[in-house]
Length: 86
Image (cartoon, rainbow, N blue to C red; front, side, top):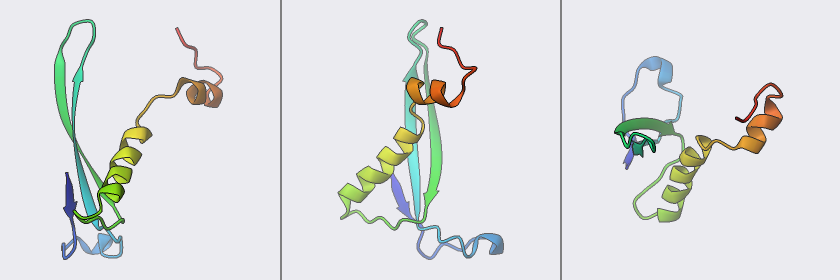
């Protein structure tokens, strides 16, 4: 879900932040061994203005958040020589 933040009044320390969009992501995960399910909601702010008539921009924003949290073993192991895959 995307929420436009135009006209939002914020604390003075954030006044020049340029916040334009709030991205709300609901995640549902299932632990494979126990089949326990969990849900969480995460909130992200962006300076990118996004309107309902911009589905491609919306998709880009959602994908940027999702890809940020994807574990990539080749990058992780290259960045951390002490990391070992077991």
